[in-house]
Image (cartoon, rainbow, N blue to C red; front, side, top):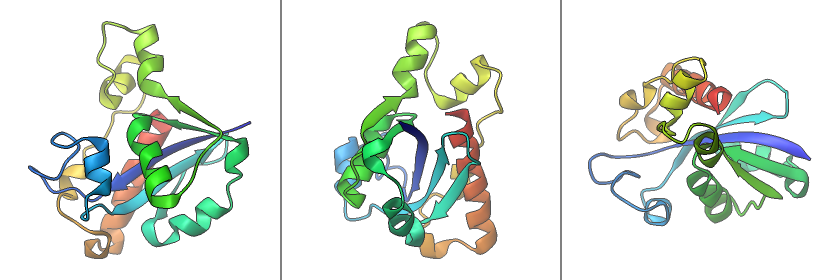
Amino acid sequence: MNILTLDFETFYFPPTYTLRKQTVEEYVRDPRFEAILVGLKMNDNPTLWVPAPDIPRVFKKIPWNQTAVLCQKSQFDCFVLSEIYDVHPAFILDTIPMFRCLYPAESASLANIAKVLGLKDKGFETENTKGKHFADFSPEELARFGAYCLDDVDIT
């Protein structure tokens, strides 16, 4: 069984269009929803990020029936997989309940997981992406956002 660690980065527009104000279903099914990129790490291979236009092509190469997806908050990422890309992995793994089993008194935010486990600090690049669609990113901005996503995947 492959383990694919995965993290979507998406368009959001605070204060109203965010996962803090909407359910996952409302957010993903909203007409404003847009994946900007996805970070992927298959087994022990290098972590990579894929820009939105290339996601369907890359997903077609993955043997989903032999792949478990690992996410931080799989409810979101796996709903995007299913709802937007019609992808259904063999298994779903989530770091939040895993971490809570080991550290029940700690916050299971990715930033705190990184801190508690002595990993690289979670970045803040999303502060620079508020209200930006894929087409709004310069190549440099997209590269920074991709690097941020890679770090999140590696922390996960």
